[in-house]
Amino acid sequence: MDRAALTSHLNSIHDAGIYGVFSSVRDGWARFDGASGVADVETGRPVRPDLRHRVGSITKSFTAVAVLQQSARGRIELDRPVGDYVPELVPGERGRKVTVRMLLNHTSGIADFIADAFPSLQQPSTRSLDDHRYRTIRPAELIGYGLGRPQAFEPGTDWAYSNTNYVILGEILRKVTGEDPERLITRDVIRRAGLRNTYFPGTDPTIRGPHARMYENFYGLIDPPRDYSEYNMTWAGTAGALISTPQDLNTFYRALLRGDLLPRTQLDQMRTTVDVKNPATGTVVMRYGLGIYSMDTPCGPAWGHDGAVWGAGTWSLSSPDGARQFTLGHNLMKYQRFNAEGTEILDHPADAAMVAYRDQALCGTTAPAASAPAAPANPVQRSAPEAFAARVR
Image: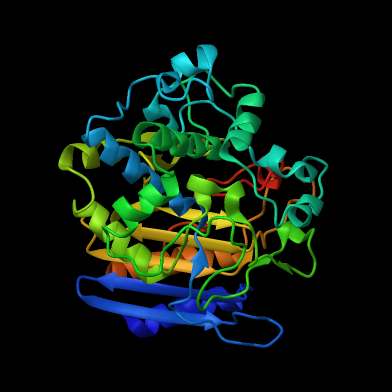
């Protein structure tokens, strides 16, 4: 673990235009905590490595663990139709064809709800991000938005990322246990993993404890970037509402990959993947399992997830045995720009800097001088219309 090199890479991310970046890296018992930049652009308050942060779709890993725990107890069958559990939410033919496993690995074909939960994004305009800042929205409403859109493909035949899948999974947990799913995940996953700074905020729009302000640029439409660190996250729920720290996320994924949270059978199911391909080139960019994914690095595959909400991005990956890990948080989002035709998002120097930091963190001295090709931290590059829908990741 080259601490000077890690610090240099964090500085490179900040120098590329990210306001503040903070991280924790672990290799066995050794740990590096580092940060670069500012938590508040007005006051100049510096970021710290241990700040609490909205971690977006990393929440999906926690939700998937809770579902697989119930599977181990015989309450949920992964290949059973969703309509058997929540027929009132997913009725008819779709409820008979979509299985729990298809929700977990995003092969259900059910559409995402973001464009309808924030309708101005379809115009395109970011006005609804501000209009709905303090709105409380029920899971059934979010699910209705997703089901109200056309099925993307026949269930089980393709892959498409959808937050609706994981809100449905939360409601399946509610049905089979009789408990609020966020309370269940808190008890059976967060507390069991020994996490002290990870929690669901519920309807509270604030973040308890030290945190950075979180700035959304929305590909230049919000200029200067606006602070969205205060937000009612019921729009993300069991798909993306968690607050955590880099240190807690490393602890969680280490516990998960070492078998402390799931029996071996369920952990093997979680690591059974489908290929996710770049739509333009057809190359495999990652392999998605049940709430976690695997992607290649210069020193082999790494497991974890990324997350993005308004103003906050997070990336957390571990070696397959959980020994070597990194988590990175940053407080400026959608800093990239579209091409002249408005058809795709252009690479940004910060994306390449994050990949270089990932390689240094996970591979150390085995990382080649010229690392993986420049790519966004978010592993699936999307077309401009899809990106503008601003799906939480």
